Amino acid sequence: MEETFHLGVKALIFDESGKILLLKRYSEKKERQTWDLPGGRVQKGESPEVAFKREVFEETGLQHLHSVDFVAMELTGFRISIPPEEMGLIFSIYQCRLIESQPIILSKEHCEFQWVSLTSAVSMLKANYPKRLIDVFLEMDACLELLQGS
Image (tube, rainbow, N blue to C red; front, side, top):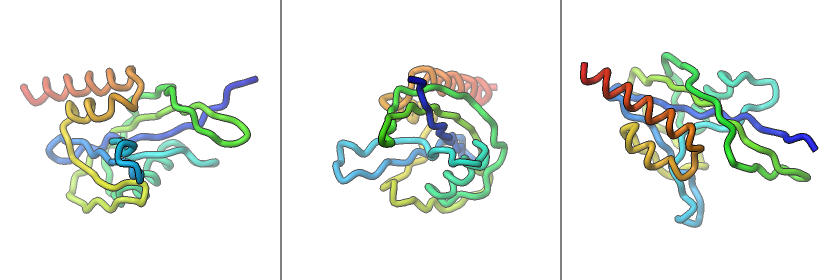
């Protein structure tokens, strides 16, 4: 049988100081509350870019994003149960900048947010993201350090 996949979009949102927005997924069981990037699945008829903006708005209330750029795409090990079958999940990662300060309005899916350095984000995300994406984030962090050192 042929494998079926859902496409998910994830956002690396950088603030003015170069920190990234992370959201804590809500669960009644505290041990299941994990840090994640804003994002979600692409709906039928949507482009990844439209899904990206919709998901970021739904999960954070943020609307004014600048310099939206594709970063990477990766097949994850996640399985989504959609009876009568399970589907795989592919992440499409985008980065953008938040030029002006805006309040974060969390959806019911999340219980907390933090602005953190890319280095901190990597350590908070590595348990739930494929190694190749973590490596991409580490490469981005190294590039940012080089730029800031110039």
